[in-house]
Figure 1 (cartoon, chains in turn orange, yellow):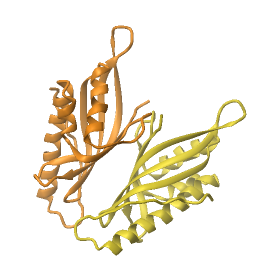
Figure 2 (spheres, one colour):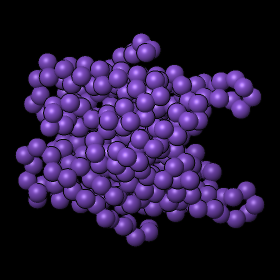
Figure 3 (cartoon, chains in turn blue, purple):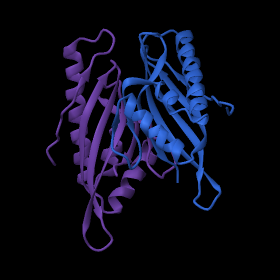
Length: 147
Length: 147
């Protein structure tokens, strides 16, 4: 697993105590690290388990995807395509209590079609939701590519 | 101005009353309508005025854009490129009190390079923030294309 870089800015929201905001940020950092680890070990179901049951993914050049089963299929397609070394970097976290909004940046490597690998980079917004088990799950996930 | 279609789902959040959630949804619908109207009349500054001063846009194949002035520049570039008939359709609104999360879909028309126009469609997530003037502003805005 790659080192998970965190350079987050915690924004205040309502009456939340600063300690609670920092807790949310570190909890979500831990979840992002296991998300990365699942993807980088080729475990699409493990990635999908980080999403709520009725999560939504808005992926580029792809129709809207609803639900954990379809989400596992999307991540399996990336794994099957040879995508590796996914790295997620949180840049902002806004904690809202039972939800949290994140801006982040990603890099990954994908086959270049000539036997080599090319690095791709982009940015994302994730709306996280705290589950009944007190764990954080991706609820809405959208990204696009850098130039 | 095109008719602004609204088919939103209001999700409960914390202790907000249902009436407050519906108010947020209708206030944001009104803001989206004036956003569309500004764009479709070629008024990039008018579009940018719908964003917070330090808003973030994550646009496809574009570096992250910060702040209302740079945001006006992005929308001016779309106007200069001949993009017209922007239509925004809210599909989900989640009201969090002073912020609100929206999933939506857009269509627009752009020059096809042969003297005609081609329709493009995509999807977006916007994090809205209520300003000191009690008005809603786009704070984070990200989108990508459909297939």
